[in-house]
Length: 346
Image 1 (cartoon, rainbow, N blue to C red):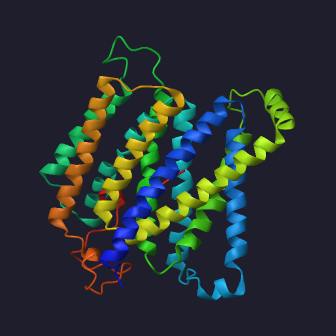
Image 2 (spheres, rainbow, N blue to C red; image 1 turned 90 degrees about the vertical axis):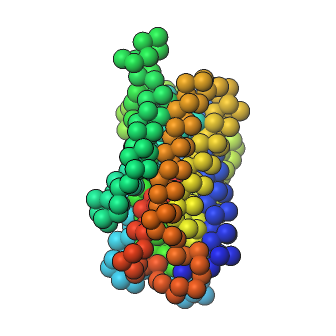
């Protein structure tokens, strides 16, 4: 059955909470890297700890019987894809901040997935590509240019972190895929199962990234820091574990229950808002007027696509009395695509 209005409200609140914990995860990881902690290894360890704890919990006899495990092959594939999309989004977001893109700018550029979702809906599901979506394309392009400030346009700007901006934009594809998977899973698979998939894959990929010889952190100083401050190391890993558990669970619940278009606006706006709050509060980096103008354009593109979606496809799940299954959409129902469409993360 489709979510009721009451469930949809809880889904929207859960989505906002997932956005907050995702930004906190990204900002804390960036801060740990600046403090010469092995941030990727700690984040990967936290993912494994959460995944193993969740697996033990789900294998308890009473919980195992009540949990909705994926039964069909298609649901198993969507469950795996949910985890892969989550780690893809988080890894790209963290890499963006590592390569110099501030947290607020990272969250702003990741909102380009809204337009990517609109294009996917047009190409894969035959959605109309109206005037508002064309306007959103232009707003997204100009907004991304204003946030990233390429040197060939802004000649007074030097040494921009273009690789970081690239990872930030690409992270939106992970967010898009994550929401598609959650909407496909709907109520047929428990949110804890999709959370388990996300956590275990996060742990494996992040530990792999930590082992790659591409980081500037001195290995000797890192080992020395861990040996002198083992208590702090354990504390940071536990905090990261709590953030991962909160973020993956909240987004799984939120995306499964919240109306698709509304959840897209919530995630995008909250990501940008919390991202700039973290950027200013933790790192003291204030966005300039050009960056803020780009953010306004990116948010405008989100709202335009949402308006187009709401106009073309009124969200049936809010009504609560349609009886339509989320895994078997009707021909005229909006396809489950991300933020237009659409949240995480980290």
